[in-house]
Image 1 (tube, rainbow, N blue to C red):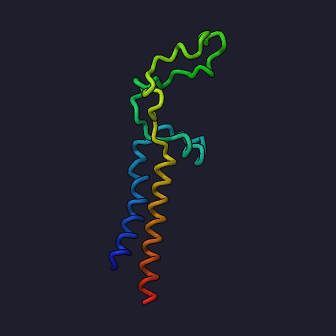
Image 2 (spheres, rainbow, N blue to C red):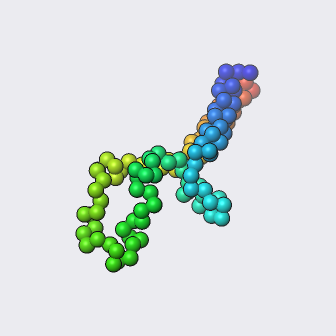
Image 3 (cartoon, rainbow, N blue to C red):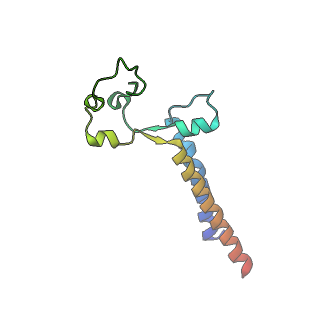
Length: 118
């Protein structure tokens, strides 16, 4: 096989393996949600749930009687803690896999066209 064709096949295999290997680490999957909703709402957690405050309801979900009078006074996290991502969404991993598969197909097509044109 040509070097270009081998590179294309390797890209396709990597594009398939990356999403498959990330599946054991994905959280948030629920069978009744459906395919698209699961793709959008699942991901790989990057922060410990105990440290990130997971399970605490946001201020907007609390009844008005439970909300503090000053909205910003309750948030004691630092600036960096507020903006660090808590989860790597599954859709990004799937998009990377599709992109690598597409690049692999292009490499194989380029190798076949080059071979047929000579």
